[in-house]
Image (cartoon, rainbow, N blue to C red; front, side):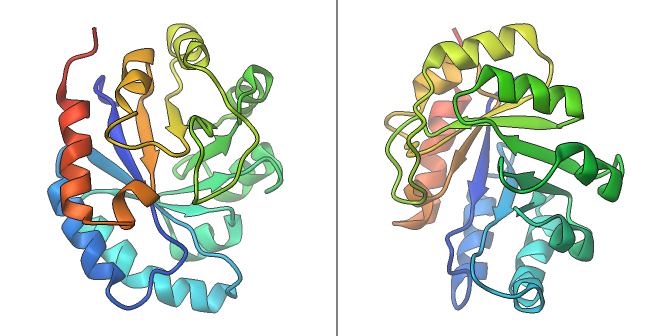
Length: 210
């Protein structure tokens, strides 16, 4: 685990067509600081999800980037993914750990809750995710954690924390300063020029924390 904050890319819901090439360009631009990618698709069966995931997983492997599956323990196991990200409604953390073993990373959405985060940590989570820090077009959330939550977590716990929700190169630096280990981003990268966006995130991540 690097002391520097890193970039965690989340896929758009449509990963067909040109997206594999876009992902490869984004990961190339983020070499050294973009270390995780979350595969997040909705309303497709597991067979189709596996088909869509295959080229993306290959690209991540070639770039030494962790390939994380959103929501589905079954799909993560099928793909032999590097990890799975679980929301609060996606099943029991301990059951997921038992099913997936110790090698697979498990991340847990904790919204703005210290209690949820501590429960996830006690259950064996490899990281906790807090958000949405800003309004997000990717996923609506009524939860608005403050910077103090990141400061509290990073001071007391060794488990990495991920900041998520509406994060851009313009508003992301205070989250880095507050102790986020990862900035999870989606729309800020895929809604425009992915290479320019990743490089802009690299600029705010490269500065030493005060």
